[in-house]
Length: 101
Image (cartoon, rainbow, N blue to C red; front, side, top):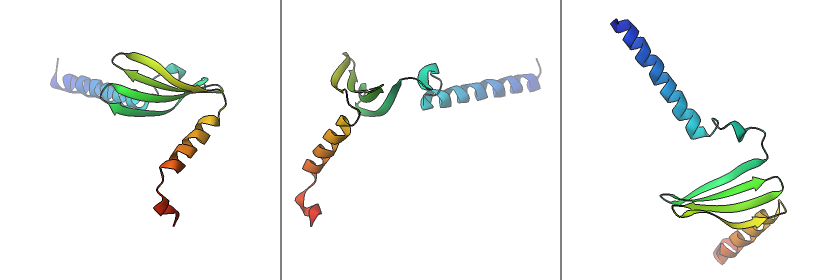
């Protein structure tokens, strides 16, 4: 094989690997990501291999924890606005009185 052919092959393989890395990071390589009834609203890393997921499945919202020991549902809400209301109340309680002045 000539040097040009090897160079072109290396370039094509490099582009394929770069495209794979970008699609994997963005999550768009998953076929169910479009138009499905399951939506990942937010993901938080607590520590290496410990994650929190806020997931919406139709009208139900789930708070799920993932760790080395497994996956566990921490809480769930049947009404879409309940989680937002609880979160707003928790944030208001944590705000110091000095900010109100």
